[in-house]
Amino acid sequence: MTPAERKLRVYHVFSFICWLILKVWNRMTARGRENVPEQGGLIIAANHASILDPPIIGGAILDRRVVRFMARDTLYKPGLIKSLFTSLATIPISREKGDLAALKRAIALLKEGYCVCLFPEGTRTPDGNLQEAKGGIGFLIAKAGVPVVPAYVWGTFYALPRGASFIRPRKVGISYGKPITPEEIAALGEGRDAYEKAGALVMARIAGLKREVETGGLPRFWINRRLSMMMAFCPHRCYR
Image (cartoon, rainbow, N blue to C red; front, side):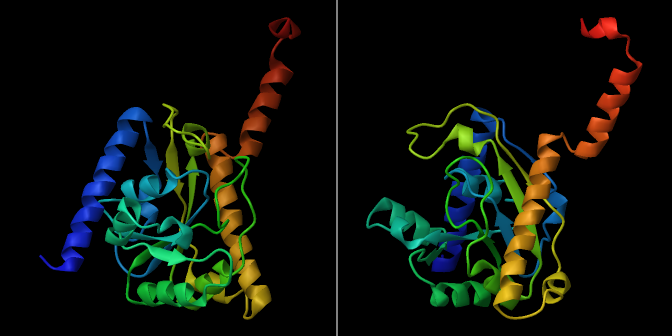
């Protein structure tokens, strides 16, 4: 077995175990899986609330894609964790400085047809709300020239928040949105302003998925309209 084949086996075994645990313990669900292309270079851009996010993102599409994650270099401490991260073919990136080498490595993998997941916010949310995209994300997206699938992971902030020592049995899930095409990114222009717009566009699409999840997949205006109609026609005694 070659080193590449060994890494692929470790990835599938680890991802399947994580998926099984999350499916049973946290009743994990996924929708929009059909929005993830099965071939070709691809970026999955997701919100980040918990260390449970990567297993959910990769596990939900285990039968479609192998996902390489960009992870902060401080996680690569000597020992089991570093060995696991290396076996899973993650891409270490420094958050303290502009890690151009890591960005170039990710772009090269994308151009070779791999799927790379990144977290535009850069770190886990401190309050459960979406944050702005960090610098460098738009640059990577613009230079890669591949589709970007926005993804919204929900429930993980409560299932395993920062500082928690065990996974709570809270329901979790993920929603994959329709891909943002390279043409859409290219239409934003070039340069730093365009890179910022690309990052903002991705976060806006993630925010849209968040709204869909919160409203059960129905537009908020539709729900508000139906509620208004019910209140208008229902006798006042119904509210007493």
